[in-house]
Amino acid sequence: MTLDNSCESRRISRLDLIKLDVDGNQNAMLAAFGRSLVRFKPRIILEFALYAHDPSVTDTFDEAVRLPARFSYDFFQVRNRSAMPSNASDLRSVIANGTSTNALLVPRRADLTVHNGMELPLWEIIE
Image (cartoon, rainbow, N blue to C red):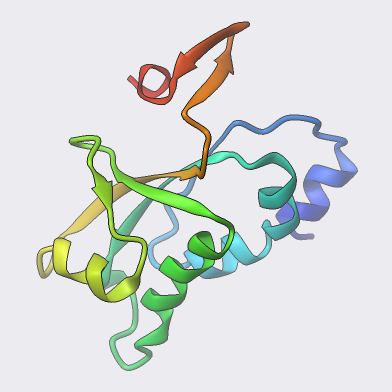
């Protein structure tokens, strides 16, 4: 069963945030969630780590970056709230060798959200 099928069978009507910690398997997780990403446009927190991807398969990291970008997500660093590149080559340049960075992926034009009945800026929700 895919994540899309699970959302549909459980009749989930709202999904605001997804936290993925899947050690280089973002491609499979996000691909299995494609319809729900389009439908719900949730914010996504995930870790980008070059070391978690097989270096002999260079497109695994590239695809992990391309897939959310294709769904019109913007990338932000969780630690300092700054914008991150949404293409693989530029993103590689901001991740130090052997380290990782946590990213918040935000659907474009989603600078406010409703949380507990109140509209709040994005960063107030994750603090």
